[in-house]
Image (tube, rainbow, N blue to C red; front, side, top):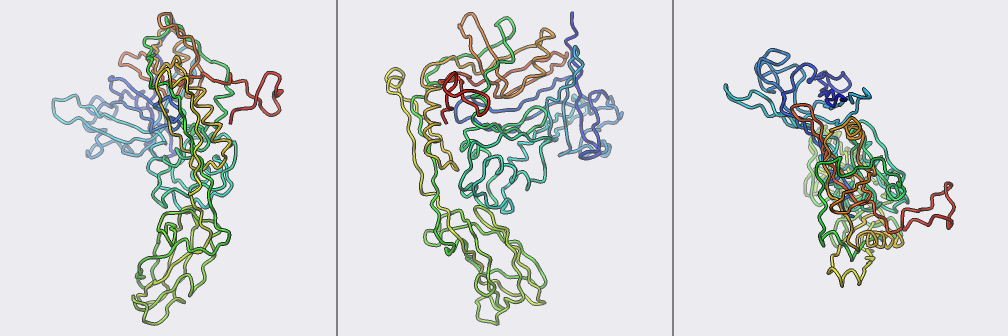
Length: 512
């Protein structure tokens, strides 16, 4: 019988980023309480398109039986804490297939929480949770330094966001956008919008998917990626898995879809006030201040985007004075202002070169307003499905998408995909009872297309993996649960691809 107990490594960067990996499991420091890894997109509907934060959970020996022989070796605040151990250090989990001897990285991230169990007579372990790079995306606030995003595709915008982040994923794999957006990031709150929330706007606008792969690759799929993935990489019969969730509910039937596109309105001339400082700012002697300026409509006060922002003129666009009320001497010559222009606001670096306190009484920017007032809704509905099952409507906002054709195409596609009852396997659980199953579990990842069959329910369909939960039990058994999305395609996935197929022979234009 094949060996089905893989070698598992739980590795951390005790010497800092790039300083090498230390295997805690090989040292005997991982407690035999099991290991759980999870990552991916939680749902399977049309609006489920961005992954949340992935996690790895395990326990470490905190008694004198660990490799250091020290009580409190993994307690961060203990005098005997292991050198380099603490919050924020890199962590990865690799599993070796005992048959092929191939190592698969199944998690990569950083230590997020360390919870030592107290008590002289307790179990003396430390429960540890690590998080993948999506946690960094959930924490990072967009900055004006990302710059204006005018006529850019989603991959170019994502690249600009990543360039400003202090922490990077282990690897990046971005599908080219299927079109460019006239304006993007213009509706994101200046220095407040988190990158992960921005990913949702971009995924909706592209109708694509954004997630982390198990090996730490940040992956963004354009909307055609799954449409053109016809080959299944794994076929599972009901004798090969332990559990299958296949409920039939009316909630799975979507018979009204309303997509919203946003054709932006832009001023003809760059003469509008897009930012004006509302208060007086005191500048200490020989000091520098950073000021954030969200763009606002001077007439309505609403937040707006801006483009073609003009270079400031001293004494007109910024004015300083020796008195806060502006009645003293002009001190503008003692002030220098540099500006980072963003899509929804600016960051000002203001320096007072004088030896006295002065007051910035005026600070403004002129440019063209970008107004999100041209929204259009594109409905798609199926009266037959509504008559049979009752109406279930889904709203799908595409914040940066200006094309009505794409908006209507998305509505039609989602309607065609979900308007009829379908075999929607929500989740499947597989235990590695054979060498072949173990290899598949260690190999499979998000967006792999798999085939399921089951005799009692009659399901025999293809699905895409949306999320993975992989566990290694205390006795070394490997089990995986997959959140699934139907691969059912109303257009049969016979799409024309430039340079690889003949339009009209056995293919058709993609619906959007």
